[in-house]
Amino acid sequence: MKYKARDYAEALVQIISEKGDNLNEKKTIQGFLKLLERQSDLKKAKEILGLAKILLVKKSGNKTVALHTARKLSASQKNLLSKFIKKGDLIEEKITPELIAGIKIVIDNEEQLDETLLRKINNLINKNI
Image 1: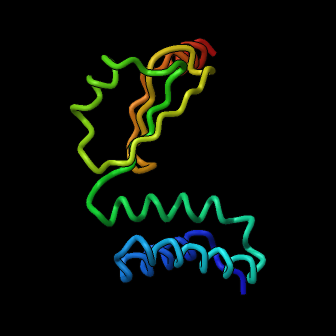
Image 2 (image 1 turned 90 degrees about the vertical axis):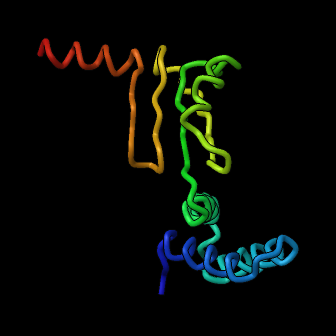
C-alpha cells in the first residue's frame, strides 16, 4: 500500500516529538529514509521532509513565512518585516525575478499578501479585457 507524503510527514513528526533529543532525531530520520527506500518512496523524501518541517513548526505554536521578492531583501527591509515575525517562526526567502518588484508574503501556505508589480500589471491587463 502506498502512503501519501503528508501521512509519512505526520508519522515522522510524531516519532520525533516522542523521542525528544537531537541525537536520536538523526538516527530516527536515517531509519525513516531507509523505510522510504524499502517502500520505494525515496523520491518523495524532499517533499516529506519539507512537510514535516512545517508540521513541527506549527506544533510548536509558530508559523512558516515565505517571503517572495524579485531581489534579495536589504537589512532595513528585513528589519521592517521583523515586526510581523516572532522568534521560532520558520522564514523562507525566495527570490523570484518574475515578480519585477514588491513582495509577496505567504503564511503557513494559506494567508497571503501580494504587493508585487507583477500582480498589479496582471490586474490592469485583466480589467481591460
